[in-house]
Length: 521
Image 1 (tube, rainbow, N blue to C red):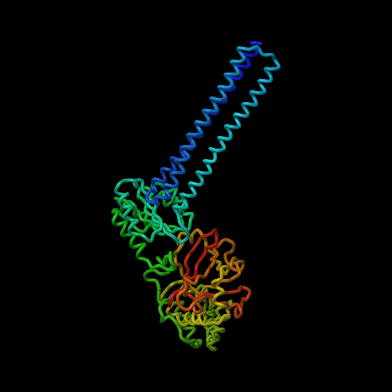
Image 2 (cartoon, rainbow, N blue to C red):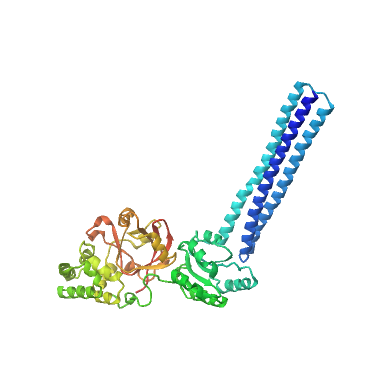
């Protein structure tokens, strides 16, 4: 009997030791991991010390509470170990002082198993309480990001520098925030991770990067459309000239903090505001030095339509082909004569419907006029101006029997499909950029009709209208519904006048959202 008790005692001690060891290992690993997570978040919060103190304190309070919970958890586990150990030590002591029969030993073994299960369930309950920390950590991350980023069309200055925490930067960060009160958020970081989260939101970022880490960071940004511009900060700016040539988004390389402030001021304050937070700050496609801007002048309009005879039409065609020899590929001699005859016939009546009908035909008038515009050659535009002005006049003055209010309905969109790589488009344009379509632009209310023009792999522009973006006579500048006079009525075509303006509001996988903007001309 004593041998049996001794064996049972040894079995109890081994099992208890194993359970205690496993429990201790779990506690040590779990506590270390959670403390590491909390320390990382606290470190990141320190980097965002310039944010709202209330927000930061709220998050720090949560983290401090988690650390207290971890300490309590450790204490609970220790208590459970002591209780289990104490119970079985007492039980084993009984084995030594009393004589037990076989039946009672089995009863005790069952009781032992029951008590172990009971104690272990208590431990698991504590685990479940503490494992909720993971959910709390997720909540902290959500709070942090929600406080760091803003809603669509808001802006942020982000500075990434390994020395961002020194005293000089701390003072300068205060200067930046006081200088640009119109900027909603300021982030001073030592790494890129938080920036990557910010860029997932619709927020415009003015980015400043320490020169030594700039190449790696810009590469990781992968042409994010939300970055407005980048400033490099380095005491040796000449070392990064090749990087600036490689990435046109790099605005300047500054060696002095004051220079950075001036560059930011020129970029942010040197802009006109359009529709509240939307920035009318740059025109990357067409509003550049030496590009033709005559199309924006009041003179680039007609008050009435004019007849164009064949000699006039043929001369216009010849002049444009001399200025733009690439057009010769599309217009050989017989096509030039045929096009001149089509122009004479349509313009002879001086009727808006006849000219718009010519524009919608399968012939050469539509591609000829639009290619002259797309080339953005001022001489070509001036040479073809009578044709361009006439089509523009017809679109502006055509009565399409559409209610203007229809365009501002929540579910009203116009779609334009083009065969163009969306990734390439995103490298050239950013959210809140204004883009201009130089040619007359056909769109449709029918998404599937527009999609056909992408050939399965291009871009679909989804165009929306808001009254705050409209200046002047909306009926004059809005697109006109020409399906009833079009040669392709099934396209349900709305046509925009040349040099119509749009603001980019969002990027999707292959859909780019645009807001129409009218500009007084």
